[in-house]
Length: 168
Image 1: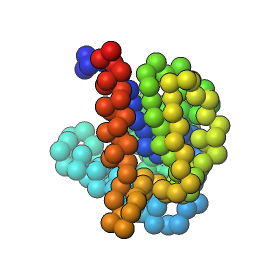
Image 2: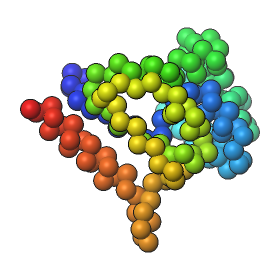
Image 3: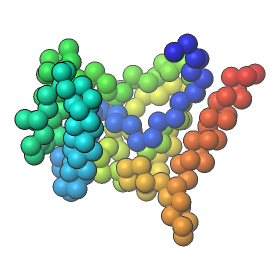
């Protein structure tokens, strides 16, 4: 909205959405259940706010993540097919190589949702930092006895660093 973007931080981004969807389908049931439940609630709220535009009732009876995504793609996007949609927001390969701003990507080798091999295959430019931790799961970056997240500190550090560099 007219504001210059001077830096970015991405936490556990789905590098190759097709691989991410497949990983969720292979992971313990709780992962797909969580994502479907969260998305279903969101869609119900959207339908309640815009009943003249959305009709999801038939879709929300025990959907899988793949089925729900496929139906939404077919009915509400111009992608036509699920595969086109997933490829459309993939950041795999060299898609991030030309990022014009400093960027930090944080991911964990033990993430059950996003395969670590996808991060190893990224071709990144000189302004992109990949912080690949051994542990952290999917967005679970905790430390100490109080199980506090260290992600907030890292995020604030990067925001301050990127803003300071932009002011120079």
